[in-house]
Structure formats: structure tokens, C-alpha cells
Amino acid sequence: MVPHLTTALSGPLLAIERQFLAELPAIEQWFRGGFSEHTPPFYASTDLRNAGFKLAPVDLNLFPGGFNNLSDDFLPLAVQATQVAIERVCPEAKRLLLIPENHTRNRYYLLNVARLQRILRLAGLEVRIGSLLPEITAPTELEAAEGEHVLVEPLVRRGNRLGLADFDPCAILLNNDLSAGVPPILRGLSEQNVIPPLVAGWHTRRKSHHAEIYARVATDFAEAIGLDPWYLVPAHRVVSGLDFQSKEGEDRLADTASELFAEIRTAYAARGIDQEPFLVVKADAGTYGMGVMTVKDPAELRELSRRQRNKMAKVKEGLEVHQVIVQEGVPTFERLGDAVCEPVVYMIDHYVVGGFYRMHTERGPDENLNAPGMHFEPLRFASSCSLPDSGLAPDAEPNRFYAYGVVARLGLLAAAIEIEELVARFEEQGEAA
Image 1 (cartoon, rainbow, N blue to C red):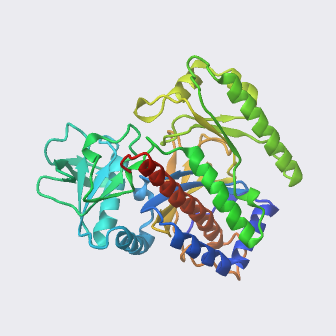
Image 2 (image 1 turned 90 degrees about the vertical axis):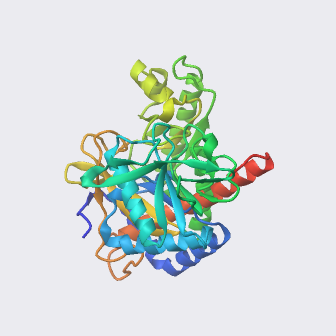
Image 3 (image 1 turned 45 degrees about the vertical axis):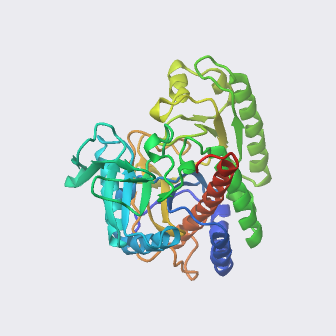
């Protein structure tokens, strides 16, 4: 069963969930139309925030690294969805090469790799793991959490194909977000499917681009079912030309925050929401909760401490931050015990295959929970989150999780369009996608 959550709810969110239940056939038809026009990513995860008056995604990851946090209850669904995904991108695939992040010391990430390998094998693929690390020069067994082990092997390039010494795969699945760019060994692979395409990495992808597309998708969806899109879409702005160490662009960042605060307060007043708004400033590229800060007053951005500047100046792989997305903060009022929670929804192809609560006992409802000290609770459903019961209350299990799945799939459809636009842009520039 799903852990009991203490959630401070107000009318608007219950109304949203009630409307989702009432419009279920129209919603599913809308998604079928969307995913027939736009190929969904192979897999993705999205972080949601349930404010009680707003339900919105705040991040989407195209290289999800938490399969170890999913409940085994829905392993069959994950396997079935994987089979659909494989048939869509490479129906003849028999052998698949999985390329993970370079977290050789992160035992829980390695457990994620082991669980992902298991799902892929159960879907009917021979799966082996190739490492981008130069120090991996021979097959190496790495210890993962919970007593599991992962065998990683050195990559071997043969012309336009990539594989292992004795393994020639049909397709390559990246679980590495390419924050530092595309390594030469992955460039120019014209004879194999690389999933997702290389342009989906953080070396080219921008959170602001995704946010713009999500706003379009969610607005179209909301209008189709007669819902105010504001309840699903966080407002945002982009600020570029920043240097946090030299304070360059600081005034523009603070002025932008002031404008966004004013917009949010106006929206709150129009909808009778008695809350103090906050903003989240994020590096426009990157993951793992790096380069993120919460702002409750624009003045804070003119008075950053050295520690805050250092935190915002660089992200994963030591990349400098010169552009940020300033996003409307969506508080989370879900709690499990003493911990503040937010749901993370996992999808394969266009199916919701599970999720978990990210929890943090030392963070508040208006703070980033993707930070050291977080832990996870798998979502376990008595019945599928894809099968809501209109005879129950809108916040009953699994109805609440159906609502989470709807919003997560809006983010997934936005990601599908985002990837299409990135591929088209790079093809126009004559670069490999």
C-alpha cells in the first residue's frame, strides 16, 4: 500500500483531481493523439510538487538514475513498457549496450544500473555495461548497494560501431547525461541507435527550453478539458550573461526576480491563495540538485554569501554557470512522518511505471529536496495508478497518483517535442544529433 501522507490540501487541487477523473476518457484520448504525433523518450523521470493549490513538475530527467528506488510491485509493467520502447526505436534489437554515469563509488547509483539491466534483460535483451572511464581497461566487477554487483567493461570502437571486445550491440542506451559534452568515442555512430539521441544530454539541453515547451503543452491540455492552465504551469524567466564569482549580472537577476514575484502575487490574489511566494533559481543545465537556490526576496540575490556564490558558480563536471532559469516555487505540503516529501514519477515509453517519494527531514516545504540527507520511499499501489476509481474521493489512492501520472506525462510529451526540436536544430547546423 502507499504510505499514508499528511497533506495540507485546499480546494483547488481537489477540484483539479476531480476534473481529471471526470474527463478521463478525453484525457487519455488527448495523450494518445499527442504521443502518436511525437515519439516519447525511451525513459524519463519527473519531479512533481503538490502545493495543495497547484500541481506541477519542477524538473524532468532524460537519464533517470533511481530505478533502484522503484517498488518491485510494478516490475511487470516496466518490462512490458520496455518491450514497447524497444519495438519503437529498434524492433530487431537483440543486444544492448548500457553506458552509465561515471559514479563508480556511488553504490546506490550502481544498484540503479543493476535494476535497469534486469528490466532490460526481462524485456528480452542481452545487456552488457560499457564504461566511459579511462581507468576501466578490463572487465571489472563493482560492488553496488544491497550486496549486488555490476560488471563494467571497457568500450571498443570499430569504425562507426561501438561495443565491447566480444560484444557488438544493436543499440546503445545512455544512462549518462553527458554534462561534460559528448566524448569522441560516441561521435559519428551511424550504424547503431543511440538512445536517447546525443542532443538530449545537458551539454545542449536547457531547462528553460523544456519549461517553454511544457507551458505550451500543458496550456493546450488544460484548455482541452476546461481547466485554468495556471494550476499546472510554474512561471519562469531566463537570465544569461552571469558570473556569480565576479557578481556580473547580479542586478539583472534581482530585477528579474522582482518582476516574477509581482506576477506570482497577482496570480495568487486573483485565485484567493493566501501564501507567500518564493522562487527557485537553477543553473539552466545540469542535474543532481546542483546549482539550485531558493529565494524569498529579490534582495537576497544582491547579497549572496561566498558560500552561495560558490554553490551557484559551478555544477556537475565543474562546469561554470552563466545562465539560470528563475522559476516560480511550488511548495510541497506532503509529509511522511517527520519528512517533507515530493513524488518522483518514472516513465518508460509513454507509460507510468512507478515512482517514489523523495523525502528530507531537514528541508522545508519551500526548499529543494534533491540534496544530501534525502532518502526515498517507493510508491506501492494496491492497484495501478493508471486505473483510477471515479467512485472514490479525488484524493483517494490511486486517484491522487493518477493525477500525478497525468502531469508527469505532460512533462514527458514536452520532452518528446523538445528532443525533436533539438535534433532538427542540429541537423540544420549540419552537426550529428
